[in-house]
Amino acid sequence: MKELQRDTDINELGATLLEIGALLMSAGANTGRIRTTIHRISGAFGYQSELLIQHRALVLSISDDKTESIFNRLKRTSPHGVNFRLVSGISRMSWQVVEEGWSLEQINGELQRLRALPHYPRLLVLALVGLAGASFCRLAGGSFVDMPVVFLASATGLFVRQEAAKKEFNPYLCIYFAALTASLIAGLPVKFGGSTHEQAFATSVLFLIPGVPLINSFSDLIDGNLQNGVIRGFQGFIISFTIALGLMTTVSIYHF
Image 1 (cartoon, rainbow, N blue to C red):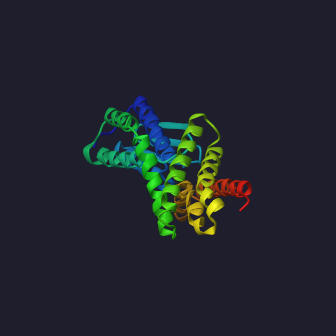
Image 2: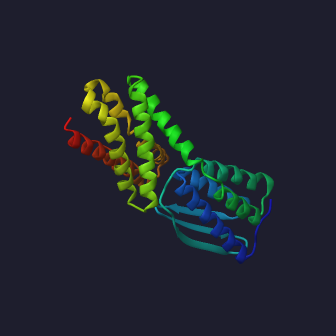
Image 3: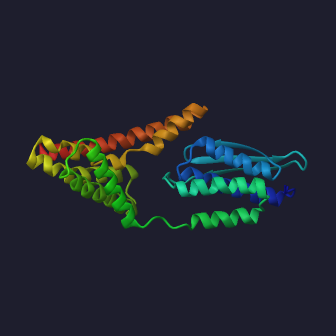
């Protein structure tokens, strides 16, 4: 197993580990996974590491008892999203560092490759989200007439959210715009066809449900990371409230 011994190397390794932690945080990884990954890689290079994880910042300290070298730095993280391809790729890389003795250059090269991975085509994402919404509608008891309405509502709502995010609106406003758009479309059959189409209205916003923040919140609370667990749980609550606000606006417009 390769060990780095120079101060310049510990600084380079520390900067790389902070970048890994920030990428995992912004990609939707839970606190335990981030800490485990950082400790795994630093241990492979023969260093002791301590990591403080805040919701929007990381503080990393690395030390070497042999040379008394110390690295200590804070790094702000970008707004959180979901990118499981990046999370799984970094996790696999960390095990390769341990088992194959990767150098720091190999790690940085793999990080560049993972960051450059393309996202799924936009039309494919819109179509699959629409199909998921239509499927939820059917599972909730919606008719075959409701399903294409929910498909259109979900896909259009996601499109509006993406466009609002491109224009750098507040993330919660983006969710509100998406919920309002989707519920306005799905509410048309209820407005003109009666209560038999309520399943379409209720399931049109399910694509906005904050599953990742809520799951990570529960995971962090179980692992004892109370601060991040509470913050992520509150973030999920705000997103849920924003979705409800979009639905309430539609109800007020249509006078259900």
